[in-house]
Length: 182
Ligand SMILES: CC(C)(COP(=O)(O)OP(=O)(O)OC[C@H]1O[C@@H](n2cnc3c(N)ncnc32)[C@H](O)[C@@H]1OP(=O)(O)O)[C@@H](O)C(=O)NCCC(=O)NCCS
Image (cartoon, rainbow, N blue to C red):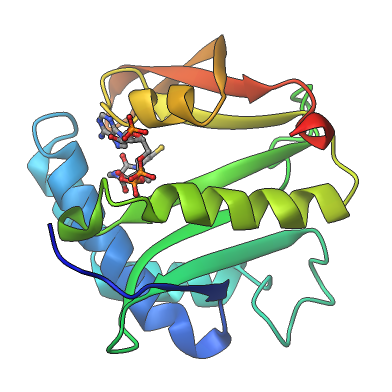
C-alpha cells in the first residue's frame, strides 16, 4: 500500500484532463473482461475530455448553470488527480430518486485506501445542502465495487438492464432512502 497524502476538493475546469485520465484508466482496469475491449478503448481520454467540456457545467466557477451537480476530486501530493466522484440531481428525471452519484472512479493503485469513502462523504455533504432525500447509484452487477456501495450504506433495491454494443448488462441500483439521516 502506498503512503498517500490525499486532498479532497471540488473540481475546477482545469481538472478536466486529470479526470478524463482517471476515467479512462479506471475503466480499463475495471471493465476489461466485462465490456468488449474495442468499446473500452474507444472511450479515449480525448473523447472523455470532449464529453466533459461539452456536457458538464458543474465545475467550480461555472456552477450557476447546474447548481445541483458537482464533481469532487482526490488529488495526491504531486497535485495529480487520482480519483473523482460526480453527483447531483437525478439524471433520468422519471426515476423516483432525488439525487444520484453518476460516476465514481479511482486509479487502481489508489483503490482500497479509504479515498472512495472520503469522496463519498464529501459528495454526501454537498447533496445534503441541496435538500435531497433519496439517492441512487447504478452499478454493473458483476462489478466487485458493489461491495463498496454495500459498505457505505447503499441497499441493493433496484435493477435495470443497460444496453451497450448490442449486449445487455444487468445493473443494480444501490439506494439510500434518506441521506438526511446519515
Ligand atoms: C469502487 C471505488 C470507487 C471504491 O473506492 P475505494 O477508495 O477503493 O474504497 P475504500 O477504500 O473507501 O473502501 C471502503 C470499503 O469498501 C471495500 N471495497 C472497495 N472497493 C472494493 C472492491 N472493488 N471489492 C471489494 N471491496 C471493496 C474496501 O475494502 C473497504 O472495506 P473495509 O471497510 O472492510 O476496509 C474504487 O475502488 C474504484 O474506483 N473501483 C474501480 C472503478 C469502479 O468500479 N467504480 C464504480 C463504478 S459504479
